[in-house]
Length: 553
Image (cartoon, helix red, strand yellow):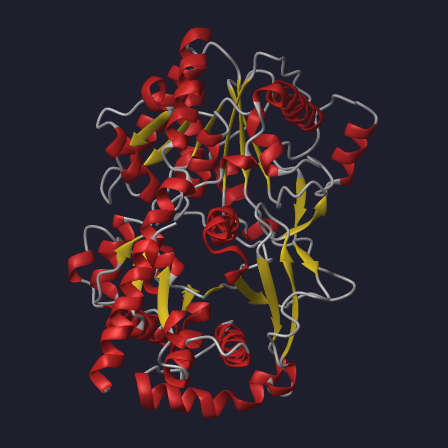
């Protein structure tokens, strides 16, 4: 631990995804926690939203009746703001505080007025989840202030780290009420950059021509963009996860951030003794589901590939993945290819006919043999529509079968009934054809589990992979980086399909070498190495805050 870390008496980290698994930020924080806990012990405190109930408790939170009881004066919290203190049930088991923030809504208008007057945050056009995120963030700031005051901690030895726009108003509130505390703000993806891509506009070729404020007005994103930009400019240290998003932030938020790349905790990965059995079990389940759905008897030699992540059709490259599998279907391969799309959508529950087939070990073709669950919006779901548009029949004559699993793989989906990390070892390859991907945890998770992956040059992880070897490939890194820009869609499709074809046709020795190379690459992205970037961010924040305080003397 550096001398600087010894000077931090309290490190807070605030996120909507503390004990609340929604997306990639949960993976960032939960995998980073063990390394941070080693450095800061119980001086590290995570703060997340208490969006749970007795009927629906957080599966990631362990309540405690003793932790911090003398460090929090709950009587000084506003009416309608409550906390639960415990530990986050992840490696390292750091202290976590869940904040109930209902009471913050009554002072919303007053708070928004102050934010406009002090920081120019325009909440006038707010809609959707803006109020909820801001209520939580303000409550989190009050809890931090309460702990610092109650414990009589030297405010100059406190650092508070806020993640994403959903916590930005907490940072601004803390800066106003307790200015001695150093602040760090991390954007994992800018609001306006994601919106530009989500609306089908070209981000990269046109980036130098975009003005963030103008685009926010055009895309009805004024409130979130204004808040995020204010936090970026007022944080003592502003960070993001990759050079890709640093460029985006510099243009759209008009401040260039420090880069703090995302690492991974290899304790999530099973050891050699367990790996073989886990791989066999995962493959057996995936093949059984495919057989019951399609009526095709996929044998053990089937090459299984998958993509996963958030359901953002263009941003996450789901369109390109389906096109690549279609391209591969025309070219063929020595082995049948079973391509899964493991992306949660608006699921209405498991298909009962498929459950019946699996329960009774029946192999016969079902209607619509490309999807495992029912959807509330079947006719509007972009993934299933594109699968049908491309003509995937999933019959005995198909080189490539595509199966859409539109739910979270938490072990209780009703069909797969295995966790995502238990499924990963069963895959032969993964593809993450991202158009907009600030970092890219899914390919990093993949190689950590020894599964070769294909990503793109538009992903932060892909850019990082190219620093390992400019000719990065399966056999030397377990990774292929498809060059992608705003004008080469079908060229990138071709690169992906040929890469999967090459791996499906490869010798056992080449595949073994590629899987080993993947694991070696993952070891270069461990948190034990990448945490140094965060330590630097904390140091920058403290240095800037001290300089500002000294100016006021």
